[in-house]
Image (cartoon, rainbow over all chains, first blue to last red; front, side):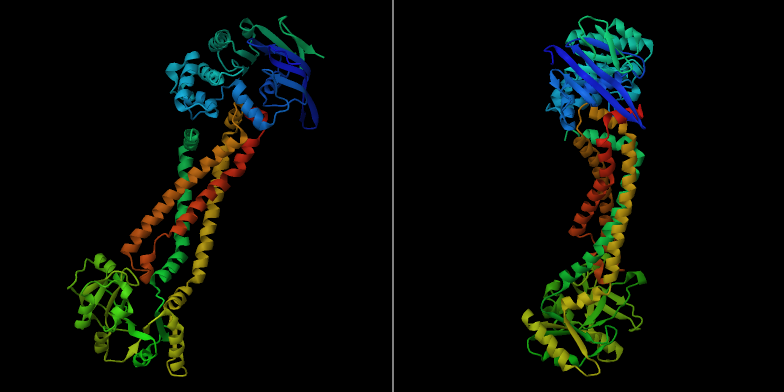
Length: 238
Length: 382
């Protein structure tokens, strides 16, 4: 079922939670595919299941039913250890609140995912410097997160996400905590990364400005995939 | 090794908490070291001092009661006895009360035969046999009071021997029963005392260790039903009986040591749990970028173990240093003073205790944090 050029394929994915005694259906039988090398946005109102979908794509959550494939590899049946190794190789994550480690410098934060690779110190340094240069923070690599602005922190987080050259970069509300100018800069940066390095970028956002930067927008509502605004994008609800 | 920097940086994220945790572990391991050393010290005294061919004879009534000097010839006549040395514990004071060290009076004729392992200085034994007021002084005492061979000193008596003795140092003792120690001639003591013919102990040397039981039986039988029955034992048994009086104290010391370590283990566990709780979000982030739960667990436990080992280094180092200083500047512990140091077994025990504190304090909270659902942890804190 996985298309050769699909970066992400969700097939009849449902995710339910038990909250107190009530079952909450965060995603309801969603089927969609995201093509390789695209910069796409997943949009929808609060509680529509955007973040849940992102969590499923990154393997930090599991579907109640259905199948999730990323980069041609089905991740639904992987155990925790295998998923962690898979994430280290294939996923770059960007969070709304940056989530940098406060006791590490920008350089050390970006180096963190590389500690899981076989690269030696010199190679790690080369990779980190390249990633920080790509996000325009080569001059700030020895600054701690508290010494950076919100926009700069998010740039470091993006550098951390791309430093391992992952199959897909996943961003959860990357502009949600930023002022308009910084948000614009981050969206521009993500768009550049997509164009320069052909990275597949999947971004969950509320930010209407994002639509100007992405190639496709997927819309969710109440856990249901209600459509995409680009004909390249196939899929839908059952 | 590539994770060391990460571990150290996390350790130092709250410097005050890290320092206080290290100090609390250091204090506990300092106490633990000192308490656990006591029984080992006692055993070491026994092992270092005891000879397989020496026998100690005292009265059955206890160390406080003397034996008649006349027993010397009778015991010397027992087959396989090669030397016999009566001794009296003088208990004199040099200058101040705090300047005490063990000092005994012995007969001069056979000290080199009785204690060849004590390392008398060249000419010391000859001088001791030649001069009635001679004394031999342990190296530790010589150093402590800056004494020299040929120097005259005076020991103040008291209690059982209410008179002073003036002595001339004729040599030194390198490996006596204690690093601080003095022996002078019994005939000089007897002369001042008016020749009462009293002896605290007889030290007997056998020609072989196989003959020791036979001599003990012969001596005890010879004086059975007399007014001063003897109790002869091998030197090891004799010293063991002296040390054995403190056995309950040693057990108590060990129990207290373990309680202290356990208590600090709980304090350290609280600190580790707080530290880990504050970082649940970061742990979730690390896992989301590919750190496996077992690796996270190892990193968190490593932090605690490093903290505990830093505490060990500080606590054991302080204990080692203080006991070293104590052992060369104080004679409060009498013949035990030289052995007051941390034995290798206790060093090993304290390392194990430190690692135990590190492991136990962090394992449960670290395991819980490492295994928590990533989504839950991220949602909880965001």
